[in-house]
Length: 343
Image 1: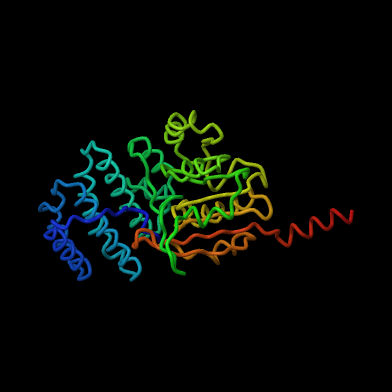
Image 2: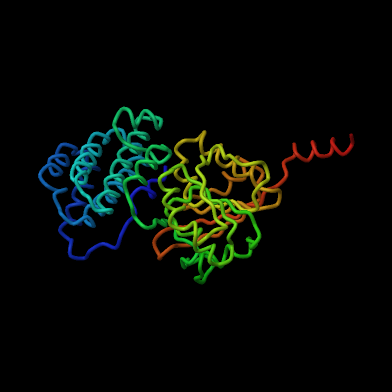
């Protein structure tokens, strides 16, 4: 499970020590199993705090607690408590009209959907139908989210210009690590482009033949209107990562940044997406996967890839794993090719 995608943290306001104390008290209640006390505390006004930054921090704290409970096998036991707290958050945020307020409303629904999916082993459709909440691999979430929230950008793992402190020592931009694996004339596919500025920054660096795909049509239409005239060699197409509408071997570079993370709790979609990315690559060309997960063996086991990894931290807090995977020829393909030559 990757809870870390759900609520993007912001720098905490040092003047909110009272809220910090309150959050840790709530966390202790969850660990001690005092669900009734926690629900009462929520109902008495914890979420009446006006500042959205505080609500964001509160959601992040609940997210961290849910992760601990999941890893310790106690998520199902505390599911009613977490659900009550998150429903209270949704009610508080439902009337917000600012972009940040709307974004947090969706994040609360997403977190609530995720804990139900993990606690009750539900699929995406069941979560949406039973508890009116979302999961990351549910296309309806992204459609509704991008149709409602009009934020400028979202780059959880950083982007081309982001400085990374690498494990081997030194700090450099993500782009400086990726550049040796790219060519200016390469056909590139950005899988799950979202609101990231990665493609725009790469375009300005001379890597312009980029096809951006996403499952949100409103988002793609917005990006086309905003950037189409300025960046004529770049395109935006609706596509599902697990079923790419592209010919075999049509791409030189495939980049995914967090897209596989959003699918990892839906294993069939996750596996299909990895294999589709492999299929559309030309032999010897590269898949670039940007994540916070240890995914090297997973990528190489699902498709014939030869991968190398780079690890570091974004802004000294967010863990980053960057994998560059060259498409290998499978044994079956080699045998098929050999038989064709013999015939």
